[in-house]
Length: 302
Image 1: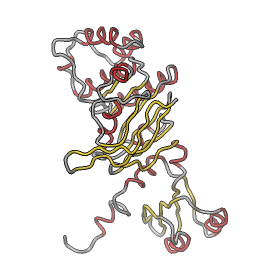
Image 2 (image 1 turned 135 degrees about the vertical axis):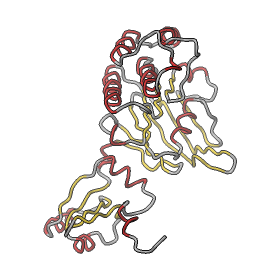
Image 3 (image 1 turned 135 degrees about the horizontal axis):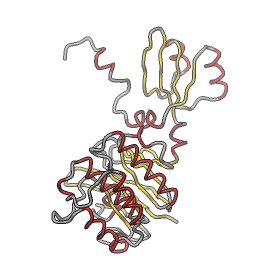
Image 4 (image 1 turned 45 degrees about the vertical axis):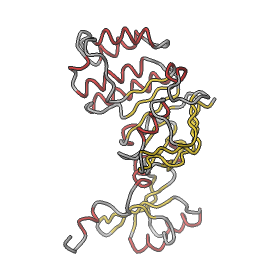
């Protein structure tokens, strides 16, 4: 069953185009990472899916209906981000009580155990929590609500490393126990790649890649060897990164080598290594070839 379908979707604000001709579908019960650098349109896209924003052109469908101001979509969707707020007078206990009334799949027992684990005092007010604590509490609501469509937009803002790790672990365990469609956005691919089944990579307002994380990891390889040999073996191929390591060089190259080419690489003493999903993401979204070292290698005065 298709939960989300975007067809030729664009979003503009005045003359500024944020999203451009997006086409993709996301099925039921898939944990998808919405990945991209800051400012590429991830939040705009997810707010349209949640029904908070209307597309400028094209069609967004969620549960087979247009999501904007749609009660069915609202009743089956939860959107978690660092701007999530609650009435000032409500304690955390009050908020959890209202969540129990509002979300039909609410897991009160799980929410209570997570609140206890993360060290919250239920009589505390949400508005007085630190930024990291607010993010953690919001994330607990997102997990315990068990909504058929759960959207986390950069949910770990302000969390320290240990809490982020615990959140990702809790999310994965609960997702395995209660499968549903989850969108998890981040520009920190290295933190979440072990969680994800699919990747929706947004870059400059378009979909750069949509597919399994395994396919993403196989798109590039790293070659290590003498630079002059690497240049020969990679002629005409897409080189996305180059580093010099003493007498040797390390290049990240699009993985389109034939079996014969791989044999010749190995015969010349060139080592071929897989590339992590995070490094592939960086390669696909790099604005320029090379690396930060190239900035310092320039001899002219700017």
